[in-house]
Amino acid sequence: MPAPYRGLILDFGGVLTTRMRLNGEAFEKSEGLRPGAYFHALNEHPDGVAVYSALEVGEATQEDWNRVVGGILGIDPTDLMRRALANLRPEPQIVAAAQRVRSAGIKVAMLSNSFGIEPFNPYAELGMYEDFFDALVLSELEGVRKPSPLIYRRALEKLGLEGPECVFVDDHAENLPPAEALGIRTVHHTTDPAATALLLDSLLLDPTPA
Image (cartoon, rainbow, N blue to C red; front, side, top):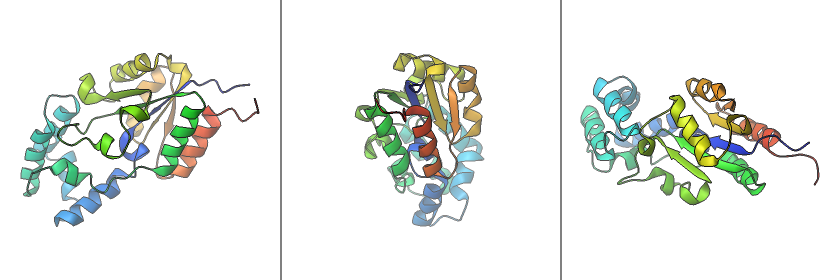
């Protein structure tokens, strides 16, 4: 029997790329910050949390984020997002899995809570932008972010598929239940890209010869 799925929806940071925490730790070292300072600025400092949330839904610019986060950290805000993501790399095993399933005729979408795309576009920088996908769903452009159910519906609309026809991969467990509610098969990616890639192959590629 052919695989029942016709679409694959992938998160960007931490799924299609190497782990965000490792990137952040490398950024702290490169900027001479104390360990944990960057994560505190993003996840705990009220101004950092607010500007990141606003950036994700297009209510703040990347340059706003640069200015606010640079101010919290006491560092030069110039082109800060580029510097903050400088150690992020494509995760080769997940990228290869995405290419395999797309070559097999399965539609592939990226669904990302946005880092902003101007003046620095991290998706294009890593070679994973419009030409790499059949659909691109960035929260900044949609005005809504995960885990709002609306952004998953937007992804399905852009793919032209129904929930039960798709698989969604994210590294944050809290982003999975809204997709599951739409009938999407979810995969929680943790720290083992080989295991995730193997699971995607088993779910999406028909192992029987044509």
